[in-house]
Image (cartoon, rainbow, N blue to C red; front, side, top):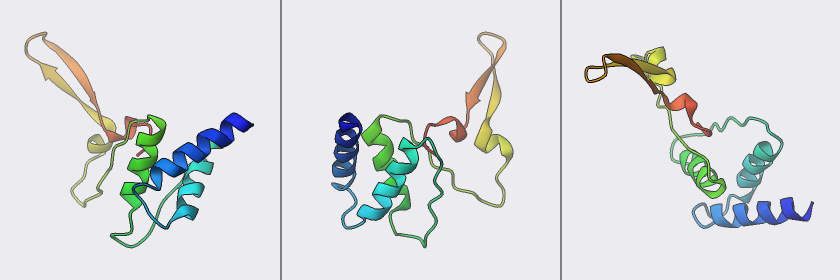
Length: 103
């Protein structure tokens, strides 16, 4: 249990170098990750949602991708697309942002 507490404190301190004065959301995000849960961060623009997600991802060594939903977005923009490689004459799958560990 002491290892988890030490890990959590390191991550919180690391994230607080970037996000100042929002310890509650930082702890909530880390708690959700430690419990293998999900978290949806909703707020008005400019409050640090993306920075929080990116900082947590970098602190724990996970990949991070952001999805900006627009009216003209296609499902393949999120999931990925198969592209034909003319050199090998085969289709190659290029994964979309949903394959990141933290989206």
